[in-house]
Length: 209
Image (cartoon, rainbow, N blue to C red; front, side, top):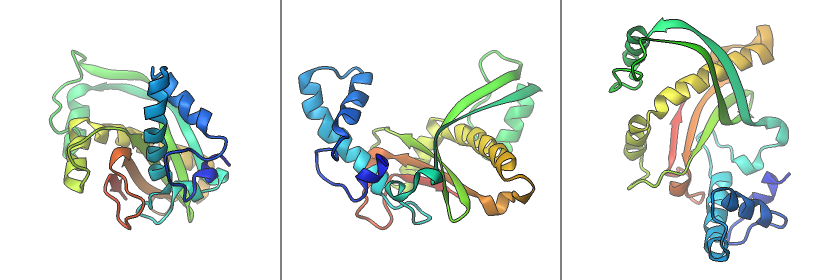
């Protein structure tokens, strides 16, 4: 697979056949000039290599996973029954989620169809994990710095919604055999600029199990 090409890859040049993939990703973000590619391809190559080869808390590496163990950009939709904003915030705050938020704009209640995409859902040893890639440039990538970044950007609300979507998908996929404690593995937020695949416990990984 294309991802498999990156296994144990290092250097500033992408694996065979991947140069245009990396270059197109830069062009899609507005980096169209020749100098942009000269500078951008080596930088993005290193970020992709680190991300796909870093060892995750459960021991897996993304580049080593088979196609059948990955579901890329999983889209989800679910309806939200009319619920008063104070009630939603009280529940979220009770579990330490978006603790500084006191409103959702001028809305008095939330309702309707909620949609989104999870960057990656992957399976290791019968457990399913949701993973989100972050390109934030932080002052540090230690656990405390990542926790602050997650709080300040309200990624905690994001992963709560993602977890609910994954739970519902697994319940549908596995049917009566689904056990949330056994099958729902956890949350992995990868802050790609801080990853170091050569370390057993890399910085740049915000993990909840």
